[in-house]
Length: 325
Image (cartoon, rainbow, N blue to C red; front, side):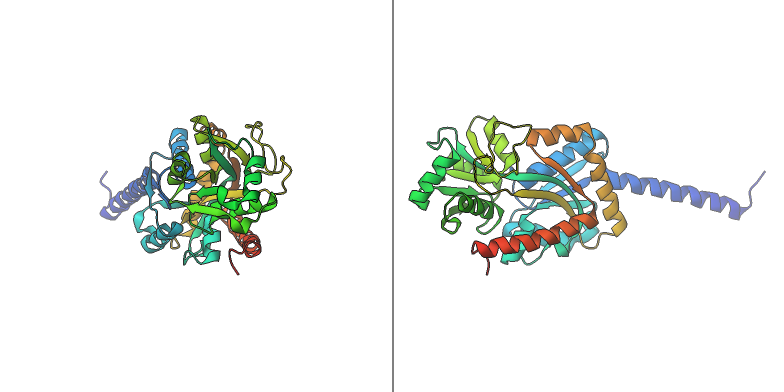
């Protein structure tokens, strides 16, 4: 039987619509692009590549790509994401506490409010690292030298003065009986260069994330003297925390994902759900344990609330240490 022309057209249109929807879904899954606002080897880069690796191995995504964009303390990448919007396709940017600190200090013109929070993924801690042949065998010895003369302990960080690596180190030295305002902090562009500065002997101590410190420790090039976790980490019981050494200081650094400001809320929710599923996979668990991270998933709404709370808390700490007025 021959169908009326309009009935055949309806069927053809429905078929084309289904095909287009399938192609659209494939495009969404084809390539999740991670924008990393720093160079290779730092905490942002490590987290983004670990997430991409686990997404692919778990089958949640078919492919992932990465783009490192250093400059302006992360400000260049944020400005790029705002400018490009969704024209880049499915793009998310990894970031962490520095997006709050640098906005507070005026180092970058934008803040988390200029982007759309997607999901908080993990909590990481600060770590203080020396070379394997360093004369300092303990955090106590570092502090004894610092109290004698702060210039004896130059501290490297993979970010600008007044940013997270600097602030965490200043807090730790302050809590350990030193004057955090006198810290001789040497800024490098991202964690990889800061590690090189430590290993070359340009500085005596590295302030970095725990996951980056573990990489150095496993290479036998360095030793971790202390971390800022609130309690001893079960996976690494041999590494002391500042609190376990008797110093009243802890610090947790979140790492999460943001989308461009013009990303539809439905797309943001879809991204967030993918990462929620990721944190439940064995592929991610292997990555998490390897890096000493703590799962800290938050929905876009809860993530925004956490950012606002941290902004208020960090503003008080930064004023106390003289980072801002």
